[in-house]
Image 1: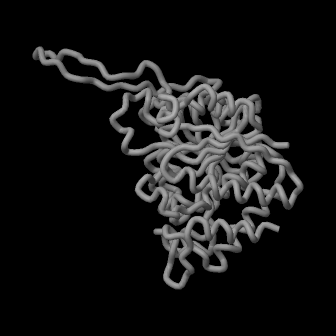
Image 2: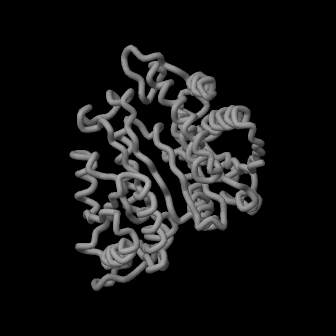
Image 3: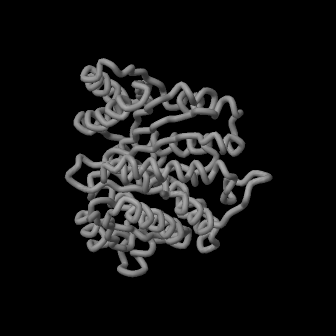
Length: 362
């Protein structure tokens, strides 16, 4: 029996989670597994129900689960709320509550979607990158933070906003180990991405990463400034295997890298702890409230997140591979949602492409 906390959020969350559960149910049937779902609200949905974006019952459900599946949070209608009540606060909060310090974001280009990539086919083909993003530190969590008023030299009062970019040695060390262990299963290359030419915190990030690398003599370690990495991802993405970086740089770079694969709707993610709390799985795209309820959102990122769940949380690699194979076959046969559609393909709704993928899981 595997207990899965399903966090129902905002926008397209309900649609993509419905797709994920269809796949989960099919896998449970094929492999004779017992899955139990505990649906709890998060983000704007939770605010509407409880007055808080991350209520205690949601945190408790996650802590008492074997894995957490998250749809998406956020909606423009909540933009006027106080910062502590906005849906995005729940996302940062659940990561902290579950100690989800390591975010794995694979960027893999399917041959069938080369036409959807903005890069030349020969540049995008065979791209297979794992971005390992530290998830609970950096400017998103650093203190002090806030908006204050100060007086200028000429006596005027002006507002000043500030956030603290901060990492300690232990935080860097544990995420570096995750990156090197990921590289051992891949092409044995880690690129540490930072801004060490101007930031002290990046210089420490390099120093500790170099120290950790001594434990992995078979892994090649290189360094790259984040601005150069942003350019190199477009010019020559195949040079990368594992990218190790901090929270804010990883947030930006992984969204940029998603365009190589053709759509945000194609990229899954896994957020991992030290093993004392369950891991969380979610697509990297947002809540897309403008298309919510229209049955057009691409569910593949969420379905591939389920594949990661079976690999990393349940140690069921065969089930994970089965899901990935079903997705590949579906794409190979020309079935597409709107975001990856190309002339000659068969345009599918969210529910239809989900059914096609599910039917191929055998």
